[in-house]
Length: 267
Image (cartoon, rainbow, N blue to C red; front, side, top):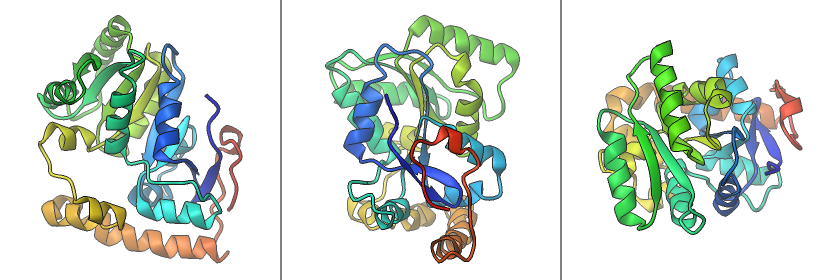
């Protein structure tokens, strides 16, 4: 369960690993309790974390913070981590569901709009016969009340999942996991964002060739321009400028929580 080394991108420690390594680490959570939580870092998220200390802290205190976007993969290779690949949340969900069947891995789906988690459950079980999904919950689009959180605690305690897949928007899901992982009777929490919508069939994914070339943002911008234009037309250029400043030494972005980051390097 030892996490891999991390490299510093704008003050966020990104785990240097491949999709296969991430899958195997998650599979090792079988039978564990309160092991931590897993984030998926994108260029947008890392850039937003520059000015959001609570979000940055959540990313840095995780068990793993995967390189979800190709820009982070390219930066990881620039840092010398040749084995790194994109660990895309929707891909990790499928890989773990597939490989975890042999060991009886138990899954709980938390997130999505009304009915999305149940639809996702049906789609995943159809795709992976023998998959064990022990519960679902679709939270309201606001903070949970104490009573609502108590009900979630009870549902997870009764279901005894190894993994709770969290499909909320970012940074809401990272803050949720950072705040509550010690209070939930599960192995590990994994934030996968839009994976619930993608794999339930509610939202289409970018073609594979666009994903591999770092163009998924353009596909999503074209499909949801009103909601996503600030993310991609404001944050992406800022991310490029900030990473150039960091890589040339013009500006330093120290890691705020180095005691939690094994082998972290770079400023």
